[in-house]
Length: 276
Ligand code: ATP
Ligand code: MG
Image (cartoon, rainbow, N blue to C red; front, side, top):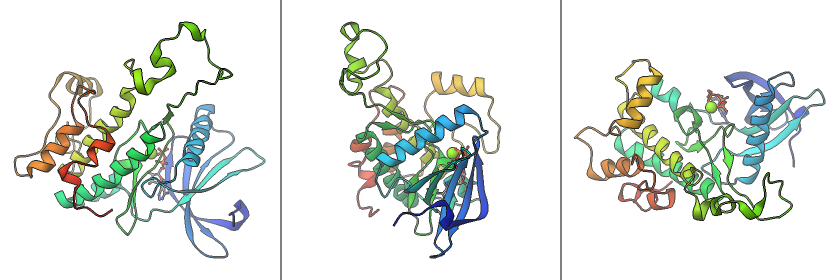
């Protein structure tokens, strides 16, 4: 049975995102709770594009490690809304801010779930492009799911000649046809950039603050960019196990071709002996 907009009622606001608001909602008949992300008709065209993109991506994905979409509502006035499963512990960012401490074992459990989610997305040619603590949702069972596909990209390009390509096909480089096999123009590395973001996220969980900056310091973006590009990647303190250290190093290779893929990371010793 599909849920319609008339079946649910708003309970409270969970958060504001770019141009949209996320509400906690209740299904009137079953009293089950859900999250509803709404983008209003009068919001910026960019925000509308982003939510449409998010919808098309959520419709393609079906993984226990990606937030589940239960329906899409389009009101006659032009509002667009996505009904999602409700993640009652909020985001990993809110847990970090509340002072939660993440042991190596908990980081491994979180890492496993995010890597499974990324493996699923990348296998479906989806690059998230915004992996960070505030886009990873948690529920009471300590399940972690990837959310917020507003800036994600679907890499899939079929060779359908009707595809509305700009330019003349005969002169296009191999990677424009098949970025996965030939890509060296940045498109291939798009997958690898999700892995870098994962590495930083896990480091932040363990350290309790963004790894490039001392606790509480506000980023000066120009300096930060220089350190990321020209400095050594951040690393763990000496006290951690060699498996944990190695896992982070596999994610934080500056040379994207040396960075491990999600499928490779699933086989890393750090993630063995973990049950979802
Ligand atoms: P932000 O810039 O904070 O990441 P955003 O525009 O990217 O915002 P989302 O990340 O999708 O939008 O959602 C905004 C906030 O709403 C989240 O940070 C989270 O607190 C809350 N939220 C979103 N989806 C859910 C959900 N399924 N369950 C519980 N809370 C959610
Ligand atoms: Mg977000």
